Length: 394
Ligand SMILES: [Fe+2]
Image 1: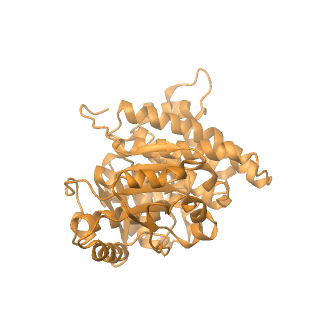
Image 2 (image 1 turned 90 degrees about the vertical axis):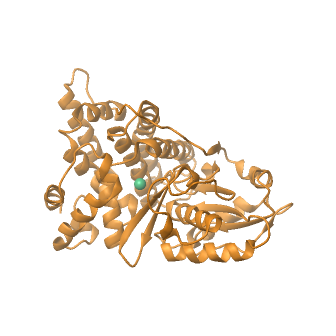
């Protein structure tokens, strides 16, 4: 643990099947008269927007929603949406923003909220401490469990021209309110359920191993690890068996756990697995959760010697250790637990299964060492060492 820690969570969280009923009041108390929903076509087709917006419209005018957020949130799209919004707001009141979706939707809305409030382009706000005041009214409703973006101070945005993913950081980026509505996640397909849950598990484990770990984040990370490790295999079993009633409890716990993992890495940050996932997403469009799912066990093995004690504690949280195990055995048990879990969840084991050419491994390693997530990774590594690890799992 470092001598210094800052832990700040500005987001008010409500959990429950009916909390969307609070939306009108939550926006009204922020002076909102008009509301723009940012979402995607998948969320709309699943009937989720209809459920969320059912009780809105009394005092607040709902503008035509923006439903074309792509799989990765995008710099140019954010600038375009924000400029549109600023034009509509000219001389009037702030329009409320409601993000309903997964990480890309929420990160897009974070970017739009930033630029519509402060102006310019999102490219102007790279770096830490650049955003110096609160942004406009913004509420997020996650539909996956998940990225944790509903509570984090980060927006990860793809720069299509440079083929990189840029992380924007500020407590002001976090939504003011997050509504966790478990029934919205009931119909999430199996593959997306697995990938987004592995993203959440990676947040919890990397936050725990981070050089910036602190006692506040640790408690949330351990809580999230325990819930995900026990609920995810149960949920996948129920989904495969078509047990729609049984999944409800596990879905609820996973949604809460993913938000807790988001709270943990909001202050402790992440590590090499995320650095690599950002590189794979930026260069080859590999979905974020899938990249994390494939890289989590190899990334832990890469960190084994630099973080043995902490990894042993991860093993305990996951329930992977046996009584009387040494620290080394507990740390190894954590890695083996993740390998076994990934196998049971049907995740690919090799990088070649993600459609990445072998000759790109050097470029991926180079991008990863330059990624901000690498700064808090327990093992400081050169690109060559990362590349050697990638060669091993290709
Ligand atoms: Fe992530």
